[in-house]
Image (tube, rainbow, N blue to C red; front, side, top):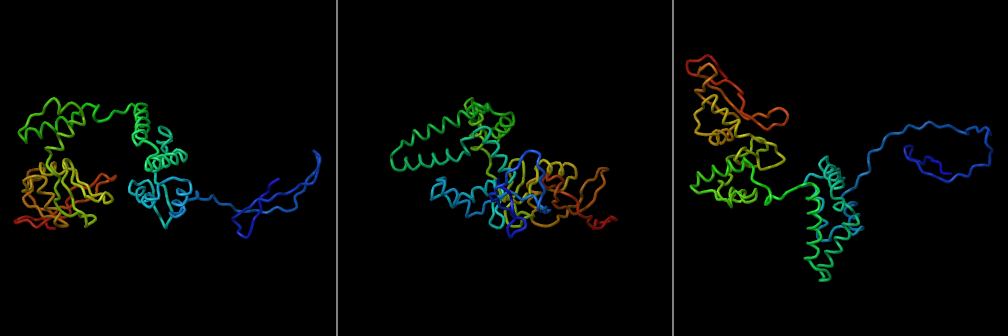
Length: 308
């Protein structure tokens, strides 16, 4: 029989073999000692960076030339976080693991990963055809797509938003949308990429203060994905329609506001048609819904009574 006993660490236990004396059913057993031990739920064991890489190497998973890039790639995809040298799986990482386990278990099977590495070595040494290996995994991916009812962009029809956007680009460029252009989501995406104006950097991010803000089709956003600064172009256009500041368009307004902490705007039109001046700045919206333009103070107005 195995029983648990404590060692020098009061929170640690080890098992040892104990031989019990013979006894019959009904015999009275009296405990020799009763000890109360306070236990705590332990956190799940985690891998350190070094141990994780060593484990992959020992199991034949990962090529020597790519092992050093494994953890940076996992961090870049936000599957894990490294805290004090220990790996912490993110919620996204757990969700991806659950998805692959359910729909494509071969993607996170250790033996399959090891076999794949062996196949890559065989291809490198001309012992296996590269085309055969590509065909094998292309077939596996196709089976997953078929099971999920997924269609590639070349097979899907264009969305209404794509058609509307492409039609606008065609008018601006003075060209005609052909049947081939609108044949699929892939073909119309190619048309959009060809005629869409390049995204322009319009200023420095007011939040991280290091990366540029780019004017995309529908949003102004910091190029640093970790920053979170994002202003929807529609909200800026709504601001222009409501207060009529002296700016030609949304791009001009946002560009000016990115130059300073707060921007003075004069001769704005209020709800009742009254004119006023005020300072505005970008402020975070609730529930992580990006940033918007908010009044941060009244400005002195000629002949008026409101002050900053």
